[in-house]
Length: 313
Image 1 (cartoon, rainbow, N blue to C red):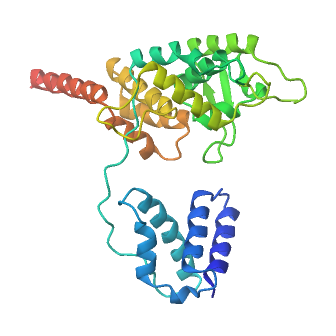
Image 2 (image 1 turned 135 degrees about the horizontal axis):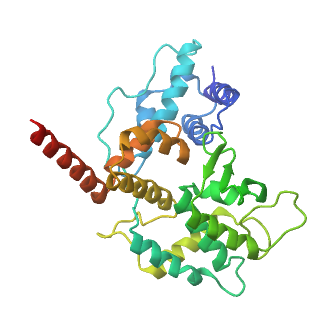
Image 3 (image 1 turned 90 degrees about the vertical axis):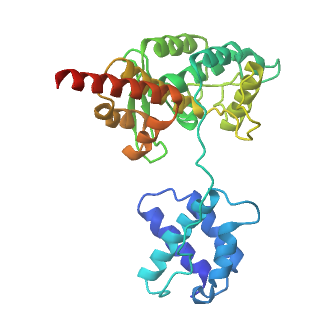
């Protein structure tokens, strides 16, 4: 059976299960195009599949992205009897270290906020008030960039201090409580935002044209703000601090605060996972080893525990 036909069947199957299937869908499309849409699935050679996995440049984590997409596809093909065995490699290569998000310090966050004016130009659709409010919200509520930009007037309950985040990354809707500082910032922005009367439930964050702010425009503006604030990774890394790192910073700062307050962090992790919209607890647990400050607080906690055990012995 032709590879393109099976890929399309598999994509339809995954979407029927409620998945967006965007990333893996793109990988599979690239797969059947590289193999040739008219080739029979039984004639695909392991050498060709491995060459596609590796790519032309140095080995990166993209290998895993492609491999995961192809693995799910071949499991489907085998279960449906289209092929008996998979041509995927049995040995997983050693990949470069996992990318580490940039965790902003409190001082760096203040520098970012002081630089919000730098991205605004007379003819730009962005204004400093929207940028400042968005940045503070992403940090204060640990939102994804798309979640913040997708908020509508109806999603922001200022009287109840709660946000309704709809159809997030994993098709889930969740309620997000916001603290006094974030609430004050959103209330101030709501009073000066550029109103739009045509949409029955207009976007909460808008540009000067009263339209929703596109994500690429927000990311480009944040890059300008970051450069103005003088923030960059040391060592000449190509992966510079990102807008999305505000979300990671929020989670890590919350964990540090819990350690400092003497809270049971492991017990509180599931609640943090739900709050930030992670599909699995393991995704939130990765924050526990993300920064020296967090590791130091964990070490201090263990030291206090060990000293107490010794005194009780």
